[in-house]
Amino acid sequence: ISKIGVMTSGGDAPGMNAAIRSVVRTCAYHNIECVGIYRGYEGMMDGDFKLLTARSVNHIIHTGGTVLKSARSAEFKTKEGRKKAHSNLIKEGIDALVLIGGDGTFTGGLIFNNEFNFPIIGIPGTIDNDIYGTNFTIGYDTAINTVVEAIDKIRDTASSHKRLFFVEVMGRDVGHIALNAGVGAGAEEILIPEEDLGLDRLVESLKRSKASGKSSSIVVVAEGDKIGKNVFELKDYIDENMPEYDVRVSVLGHMQRGGSPSCFDRVLASRMGVKAVESLLEGKTNYMVGILDNKMELTSLDKAVKGKSEINMELLRVSDIMTT
Ligand code: ATP
Image (cartoon, rainbow, N blue to C red; front, side, top):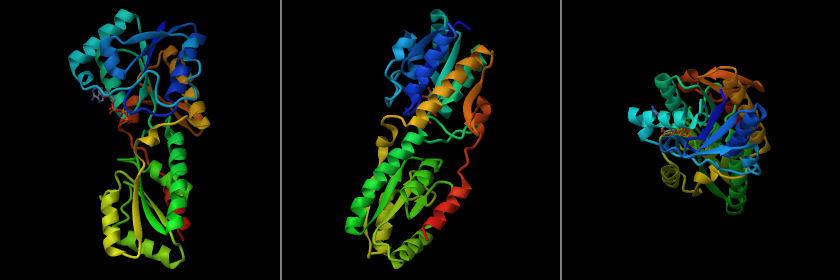
């Protein structure tokens, strides 16, 4: 291997730049070339490439988003699209890829490898932390800190006006963000896709909380919560069934993806970049780099894609006890 291509794909996440920097500098350290592929698979099919040196990635470790840009590409899902991408890589002399992204990015990479026997290693970059084979994905730590900061601010206004706030956070399929940020921000209830609290229990819990002397409440709701109601429908339900509450809704939205990465994400991204490049140099392919018990470990990409990322049941219990 003498030239590695690196790209970011799917949803962006804080810390992706630190990962790009790490991949580029690890290549420089091992005297191999590194090419930045812009706009994910889109740029691969368009030949949107740029040679990156150790100095090309100065001053990006602290920035959010991705300097390589990201995209979602329907064309790469076609055989013709992938053929085009492959011939561009060959033309450029790229002989291996580091893919920074989520499940979809890895699935595309696996199909590509299967067709062209092209070496690939994945780095999990997504705020959702929903990937099997790693305790943490790049961007997750920053995102939960962003959410906690936002909820702290909402709490100030909630307690001044004795209000109940439903705060929607990202998480369609997994409740990691809601559960961790919820516990960290001291939420009264946390609604996640993995557990069906049920509307009755929610009402009961809010009544208990009011009776115990709490004048304001924060309920953190993951986008894909099991009750199956969005925050606005939840507000309507509580308005109807608990008129004693003054209910407000706050949808945090895309701000959860932005911002300067936390120290944890920067260090994680730096470690993953080194491991990814060095794994390719050792001849490995179709693996994802992960962190397990604070060690860099490889999990087969196939398992990473198919496996389920489980929430921490102990944390769920902690959250229940904290609402006493
Ligand atoms: P996030 O978790 O943030 O959504 P992701 O990597 O899962 O990140 P996707 O949009 O699902 O994001 O996937 C990124 C890109 O990977 C897609 O736009 C598409 O180009 C490619 N991809 C996904 N699934 C496939 C597939 N089955 N075949 C080929 N390419 C795919």
